[in-house]
Image (cartoon, rainbow, N blue to C red; front, side, top):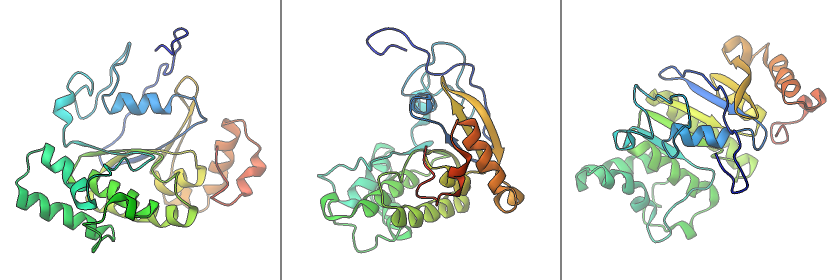
Length: 248
């Protein structure tokens, strides 16, 4: 890849697989290649070498194949300000040419599931940050994707709002059996959300991997958190910080 000054390697010998229905949380310091990996998975950029395969297809070469199969939740809600909450959720369904009545039913259903009944006709400027992100999540789920790609979706929210929305998001992902890649800078968030955690070093490669099974989420949690801090070159004493502060 080029940054205008020369060529640099953003991803190097990165190889991993994600099982159907698995949530993989990706951690790493700024500049480690998380966003490049995200763009490769979403088909926004082409790999200079190697192969990216998602459900048997290459995202960049077969971009149209993935319409409706991948839902994306960005750090910022990216709502269209001239569209109401309902119309923003309808956007993906309209692109997929869903019938108007069916699309309305689906969009209203997801807004309701995310606690936004009564706000269907509100414009983004009239909604709080948490509510706007709920609309963004509803938009991603409404197209019934097989895979969800999430790029620090709660980092712009206050911790209480982020905590509540994180729990709601996780519940919906598990209920619908989605496969998800969840990028975050919050160590505790990764441990709460992920079935598996991948810690990246620059250029993007896996420096540490941990499975967050029931045993790890109870007795082994502290050891995993300490190991993540060590791999990232941070003071293990930081593992005593509350979730809102355990940030890289």
